Image 1 (tube, rainbow over the protein chains, first blue to last red):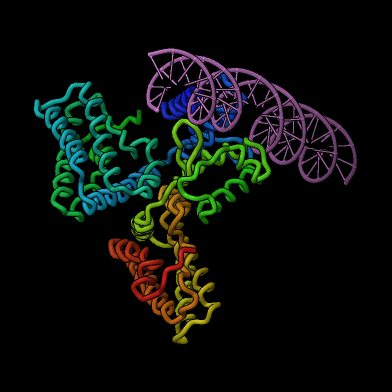
Image 2: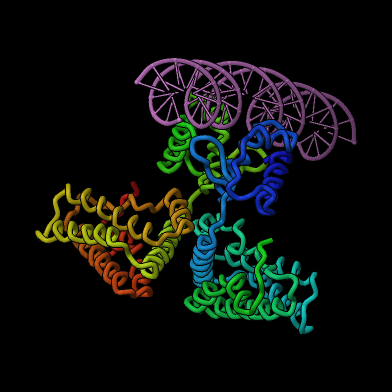
Amino acid sequence: MSKQGQRVLVTLRHLIISGELSPGQRLAEIPISERLGVSRTPIRLAFRALEHEGLLHKAGARGYMVRETDPSEIANAIEVRGVLEGLASRLATENGLGTETQDTLEDCLTRGDRLLAKGYLIEDDIDEYHDLNVLFHSTILAASGSLAVEVALKRNDNLPFASVASVAIDKENLEIEYKRLSFAHMQHRIIFEAILSGQAARAESVMREHANAAIRYAEMLGAKPSSA
Amino acid sequence: MSKQGQRVLVTLRHLIISGELSPGQRLAEIPISERLGVSRTPIRLAFRALEHEGLLHKAGARGYMVRETDPSEIANAIEVRGVLEGLASRLATENGLGTETQDTLEDCLTRGDRLLAKGYLIEDDIDEYHDLNVLFHSTILAASGSLAVEVALKRNDNLPFASVASVAIDKENLEIEYKRLSFAHMQHRIIFEAILSGQAARAESVMREHANAAIRYAEMLGAKPSSA
DNA sequence: TCTTGGCCGATTGGATCCAATTGGACTTGA
DNA sequence: TCAAGTCCAATTGGATCCAATCGGCCAAGA
């Protein structure tokens, strides 16, 4: 895809996720194209793409609406992510890890150890953890070698709390975040060990539970979730 | 989406799945638009959509390629179906069934009983079973109340393998089909009973295993799989 | 003969134009 | 005053036009 088309897509995605385009709001092609200073063509393509991502849906016969995220649907999406990533972990276990994959995962674990070793978190640590978290999960997905899992998971990537990218739950309360990430990191360790030692069922079930790391654990630990 | 755009998308999907456009083949917009008798615009949209569905992927900087499908992806797609429908069964159990849903499922079971009671199958029975099978599964999916599961399953169905449609594997050998459908039907019974009596884990695991009914059981029973 | 550079054709992305469809508003009649 | 039918404006889908870019081919020089 071209640079401009990519820019339009990224911008719209941001406008939706940030809430600047409010849920339920109807989007017409012409106003948006004027707002972004392009013609209708890249907007039409972006709307279709965002529909596939689940951020927009058709508003009757004419136009698109920004998806309103029902909290119960977020819970469902988290369940879906759990079973799919669990399956990916099992498949990865059955396939075995290549040495490169293994190195990448070990590196993620080491970086996590370093972050948590000091006994507390600073704000930058959240971003660092976010990066290694995304890398850890995408590496396992790749190791599963399953296009089917990948395609099924892709739709969750932009949903608040249901995507791997939803790490930061409550940046205000770094103490709670420390507890939560420590636990999530321990799950990463277990998953890695299970995959390495061929314990497919264990890898699957821990990864499935791990999908709750983002929001439920935060609530259990007393954080007040804010979606950004 | 419009009628024509829809037609183009369906046609291309069919051309890819049927293998008429061979895996690895590069697709340019102009030849395809001429072949289907439309302009480039709907083709461009369809290419993007098919990329999201996993049927096409970008061929370098220019154009798209038909995805080449590893046979192991069929097994993966079945696994994905298993975990997703299993999840749907668990959610349905947790939500409980409405009386109407319960009636529909019972009706499916009764129809299946009738088909199998005579101890053998005739060719029309296959279609009848196919219909009730689709109804049974879609009813449970609806009862799960999870849009996320529904969307993920729909994507799985569009992959070039393993949709529910491939239930009828070997119409030639009705004896093997009788065994296969008898077993699958028994699984339906168990799933229904588990959901009714609130045994969520049981419903989930039996449904997950049941995903193998389409292909593996047929192979185990000695049918020769026909790829259609 | 092999490599490198430039040119030309092919193909895609973006803009604009045209047609078709829909939704709403206005009018008219009961 | 309300309902129904018709007409108009707005918006979307499809086609075509233009520009930018990529790749391949050919020639020239080392």
